Structure formats: C-alpha cells, structure tokens
Amino acid sequence: MKEFRESLYGALAQTFRVDELYFERKTAHQHLMIFHNALLGRVMTLDGIVQTTEKDEFIYHEMMAHVPLFAHSDARNVLIIGGGDGGMLRETLKHSEIESVTMVEIDADIIKMAKQYLPKHSAGAFDDPRVNIEIADGMNFVRDTKQRFDVIISDSTDPVGPGEVLFTNDFYEQCKRILNPDGVMATQNGVPFFQIDEVTTTRERMAPHFYDQSFYSAAVPTYYGGIMTFAWGSDNAELRQLGLDTLQQRYQRAGIKTRYYTPEIHQASFALPKYILDALT
Ligand code: SAM
Image 1 (cartoon, helix red, strand yellow):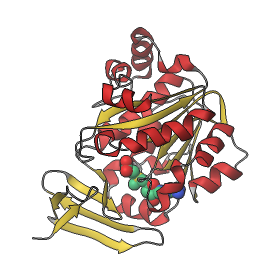
Image 2 (tube, rainbow, N blue to C red; image 1 turned 180 degrees about the horizontal axis):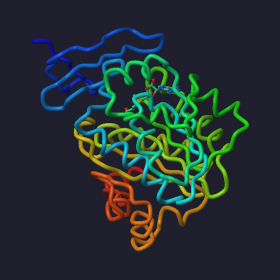
Image 3 (cartoon, helix red, strand yellow; image 1 turned 180 degrees about the vertical axis):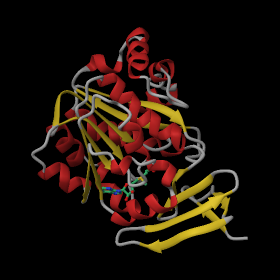
Image 4 (cartoon, protein in one colour; image 1 turned 90 degrees about the horizontal axis):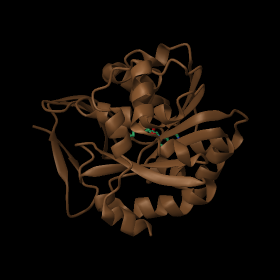
C-alpha cells in the first residue's frame, strides 16, 4: 500500500496511507497530489506538504474567514490570496453583505483539480456571481491593483516556493496600501510550536504597516504540532477586542451555519500561550 510521508522538520514526519490516488503531477508551479485516506477523506498536498483534508478543513477555513469578517461586520469587497481548493471562498461567501470576492491564485491547475477531486471544499462557490478569479502571483496583484478591499485573507502555502513572497515586508506593505479604512488582514502563519520563527518574522515584517498587529489561533489536526497561528493586521485596534455580546449578535444576525467557529471561540482565539507572547517581546 502506497504511503504519503510529510516531513517538515527532519527529525519528525507524519505518514498517510494512500487508499486511492486521484491525481499526482507537477504543475507549472508545484507538485500536486490528491488522494483518499480512510480516516481523513480526500487529501491535497503541494510540494510534499499537506494543504487540506476533507475531514478537518472546516476548522481552518471557518477560522480564517469568519474571524476577520465578523470582526469587520460590513465587508463589501474581499480579497483572497491563494485558496485554490475553494474552501476559503465557500466560507467567505456565506456573509451576505459581501458584494465581491477576488481570489488571486497562482496555479490554475489547483482550482481545476480541486473542482474535480475536492468538490466539497468549494461546494459551488466558484460559480457564485460575486466571485472574480485571477490567475496570478499574489505579490504582483497586490502591488499593481487599483482596487480596494475591506478584508484580505492570505490563504497561502508555507513560506517556501511560490508562497515565500507572501510572507515578506513588501507583501504586507502592499496589502495595507489596498485595504480600506477599518480594513482587516488575516494570514496563514504556521504552527508556532515548531515554527516559532514564522511568528516573530511576521511580527517584524507586518507590524510596521498596521497599528494593531497580532495573532489568533486554532488547532488543525493535520497541521500537526498543536495550534496554528493566523496573523492579524488592522489600523482599528477595536476590531480585535470586540465584546462577546457584539460577536454573538453578529453571528445570530448572519445565520451562518458553522461546525467549529462560535463567538466564544472567536474571542478566545486571540489569547496566546506564554511561549508565543515571550517570543514576541
Ligand atoms: N490551507 C493551506 C495551508 O494552510 O497550508 C493552504 C491552502 S491553498 C491550497 C494554498 C494555495 O496558495 C495553493 O493553491 C497555492 O497554489 C497558492 N499559492 C502559493 N503561492 C502563491 C502566490 N505567490 N500567489 C498566489 N497563490 C499562491
């Protein structure tokens, strides 16, 4: 029986039994693999790193979409960088106030193969009339665009390969440039227990561009190592400190069905363990 082995840290690896291989090929940008695993359902990997699984994707996509969007509460134009599997699009579009979502994905093959082999991720989101898909490097897009956005979600791969540019000072600076007043940016920021440098590096590079820069977290089982962090940036510090009653009112009013996100989890997710706070001071 074939196995997929992910080894991010040399001394440690995780293996997934490949019960059925759907697709494996080098695209123009990265090595893409989609397979079925009896426990996790369908799994997508890029360049040997687990990107998403049917079993636990809801945790990641709900937390990266609903925390910034409920914090903002009136986002009309949203930008997603990456997100090729369509899960972020699915969750984002649940917010009825949104008028347009621009998704900038570098690799058209990811979208094509996700539509075919991971249909539950997008669940029709790619066909929503509010969606505009751009096939481009997210760095080039944020540098060149004349559009402005209320929420920016960077749903990228890790800072290696094509994703590396999405963790740079230049990227955060350009994202701030195209963010509307009271806008919010959230980014995928790794598993701090093993990748604490991703937290300190993001703080160094992102904090100069936002009045309020911090992190929130959730544990996504297949991103092993405990909690993962999401970086947060906004010039409106209140958006990260909203009261539970406000969040509960917004959640009730929106009537969005979730399986992980709750207003209580939202508020608690910004509480960071001491080892992360110590690393940030
Ligand atoms: N949930 C995953 C994670 O946390 O690692 C990320 C999901 S999604 C599959 C990551 C997407 O980022 C991929 O589709 C990849 O093609 C895209 N990507 C990587 N570098 C990019 C870039 N520079 N511009 C736009 N998209 C990029």
